[in-house]
Length: 360
Image (cartoon, rainbow, N blue to C red; front, side):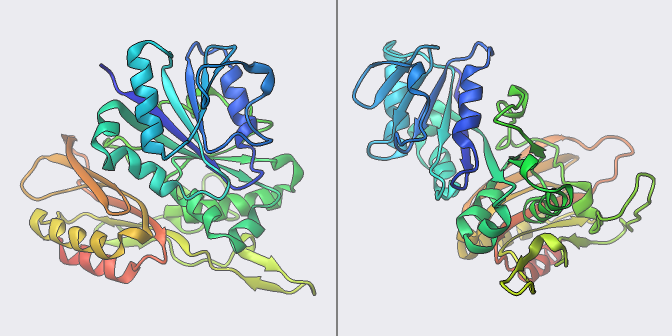
């Protein structure tokens, strides 16, 4: 039986998660969706589309979808849903988990990898993070939960973009790219978003592509017009993601002064045209995730390894790390390793030193 795809929908309080969810549930995509919410609050799914209680914590919607609350823990809820689906008591094609505004998506994502029963039934597709354009700067400055939600994202949706200036939106986009250069960013109005940007994103699949925002790799992205050239010497190792001074990081005080705010959720990209020694790299990464795993939100790489003509794909969430062989390097393709790390106060110097020492 095919695995049930699951999507985690996260975002700080008031970012528009429920608005987007209502739009997705109302779309004519022909899919039955099971929505898991932490609780039925004032901002839950519209009462108009709720028709009957199946059990005390599972509600059937008029459009065929189901909605349930987490009673004990997410693991139990997922197993319960899958069991009822097998018995034919309820029917759904995929799951969307709407976290609370203050939730850290890390433990939610880990549930799909750490529990064998869940992993045998579900496939975690992606983490979607909504960011409130009007209040994001203050939220990022004051709340680590908001920064973590961005760091975990496979897709970022900016809401309420019509309430801020174009300059403010550009500044926010820049800040988001420095926290997470691998997640596409899209402004949405009132939850209007194409289904292809929500489902089947394959954010947790081990695939041979690692799309990193070009602006992040050039280290600039401001005042650049189309046609401006950026050059990199790919003959040596280099790292992107250095500290930058941009207005989006500033926090205005009562007297109009600007205090630079340095986000603790940061990212950097390591690239090298030299091959990795598999044993050295495995030993180093294994040690690093044991010590710094709680601070490592997401990491992913396409690696050039000694001893194989194929790409090696790896990724991880906190202490959980996996790898697999990808396709062969194409004839004429530059065999370059590319890795992105997103985390909280990452030990960047230690990572760079260890990665360099793992090269041949």
